[in-house]
Amino acid sequence: NYYRDVNRLLHAVQKNATKGDPRSVVKAIDNFCRQKEWAMNVGDEKGCILDSVVSEVNPVTVLELGTYCGYSTVRIASLLPPRAKIITLEFNPDYAKIARQVIAWAGLEDKIQVVEGPSGEWIPKMKEQFGVKTFDLVFLDHWKDRYLPDTKLLEDCGLLRKGTILLADNVICPGTPDYLEYVRNSPRYKSQYFKSHLEYTKAEDGLEKSVFLG
Ligand code: SAM
Ligand code: MG
Image (tube, rainbow, N blue to C red; front, top):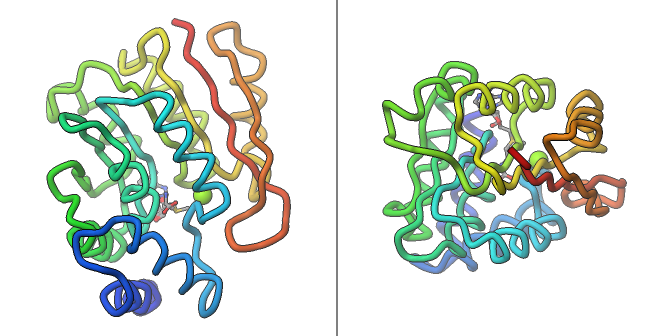
């Protein structure tokens, strides 16, 4: 039962984090996942790399693929400049429901739009439904076999601009070989690997940061 698992994570947030303090929400989730139950958040270690990329890009429009409980969403949103927004896609309604509550606890509802449904259906509707022109930053962290088709879909839908940053999690573990081979060899990207560890473990994993060159 997915809902019961993530409900325990939500309760840990509501018990241990300060309402309106995003960093305390992040910390409560990391403590819960290290001490009680592993969960598939980007986690504290790779989270620091994510933070530094968000700070460097200073994006106004962000797309996240794969919300889960909203851990990375809160991490990203807490670093965004005042007018900026993040759209995050999640196709599991149980997870979307928990994420909305985690986001509310962090006090970040104004910056975050949780959109329910499969990425392959939403990406082509982004422009008309959300008035997005292009994204400054895309965080890919949904099912690993969707990274490549959704990247091509983002290209085809004109949602990437020269300089858009794609940041992909779990490129080693569980791994996204077809995506890595694409961004590392396509002349349309300049790509760089950040070595780290799978969330809450010592196994190697990392993030791939790829600049879309147009
Ligand atoms: N980004 C989150 C974090 O670090 O806190 C973790 C996301 S988790 C690894 C992946 C999530 O993507 C799951 O909740 C799953 O239900 C969702 N997902 C997988 N494929 C999807 C798709 N094609 N469209 C929308 N959501 C998807
Ligand atoms: Mg991940």
